[in-house]
Length: 196
Image (cartoon, rainbow, N blue to C red; front, top):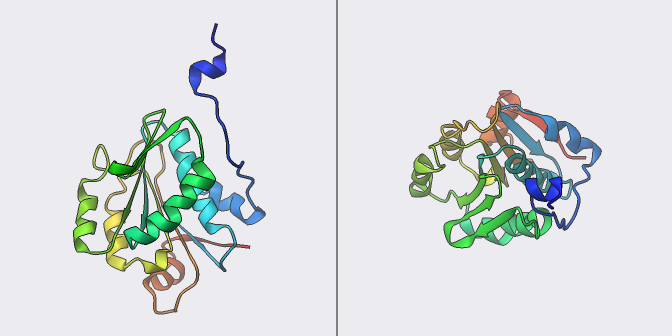
C-alpha cells in the first residue's frame, strides 16, 4: 500500500534547503506585480530570485514561469547553471528539457528560459506560454535589460495559475540615468528591497 506522501508527489532529494536571510523574508512573501532586488554583490539576490521562481512553480499547478537575461550565453553559463545546481538539483518533481529551453514540473508547471539580445528575441515573447501568458518572471542582472525588454515582458503578464503575477528583477545598482533607477525606484513602479 502506498503512503499519502507517495501518492501526492515523488520523494524529494534536496541539494540544499532554502533558509532565507532576514532581508529575504519580506520579498519572498511579496505578491506585488513588480519587485526589484538590489544591493551589493553576494547579498543573496540571485538565490532569492531562483528560489521564488522554483517555489511558485511547485505551489501553483500549471504555472508558467520565465527566467531571462540579456544574453543567452550569460543565462546558460550563469543563472541557469545556478538554478539547476543550487535550487532544483536532483528534485525528481522537475525534469529539464534542454533542447526546448524549459523545465517541466510534476504538477504541469513550466519554467522556461531565454535571452533577450535583440528585437527578434523580444518578438519570441509574443508566443511564449501555453496560453499566451506568463505568471512569474525573474530577470537576473536586470541592469543589462533595455527598457524595451521590460515593456515586452510586462505585456506577457497574463497568466492565471494564481491570484497574483509578478516580475522580479535582481541587479546591482547602476547609474541614476538608468531606466530601472528612474522608473522602478524613483518613479515607484516597483517594490524595492535592498540586500543585506
